[in-house]
Image 1 (cartoon, rainbow, N blue to C red):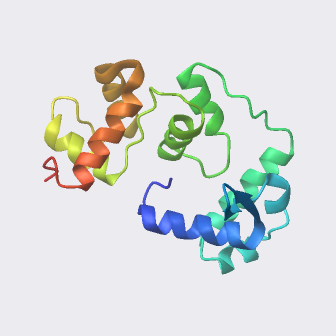
Image 2 (tube, rainbow, N blue to C red):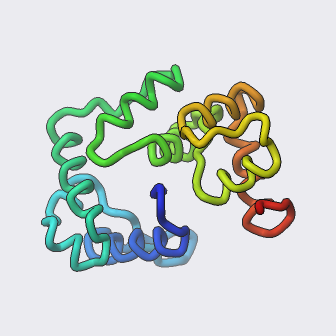
Length: 168
């Protein structure tokens, strides 16, 4: 997840990092590339990552790896707000990226990541809840949809991306 990046571009960068620093594993008769472990990715320099096309994010990755290698506790609190604060301790991680990680890998189902598509859809479909402030909009959506807001976000994102609901 990235605040300003499209999914195909994120996948492309992910795959390039996996190809360069990960390893091939066999699963169900297929060879797959596994994303590198922290140890494997620690071999990368900022220049190596820039050469893979990650741009300014190379510094974010390197600095976050330093934090992780220096004893960052990977166990996240169960409380959403506390877990979000903890995620944002990593260099370059803001609200959107923290919410994506919490929703998709930490099972924090109330997390409500807001990208461009979600923001457009919310502005059009829920004008009474809309705010240009990320934290306020996220809070409004979590309050409206409750403890499983992340599921609602996925449906709204899908509907917006596929023209099922109006976004403009």
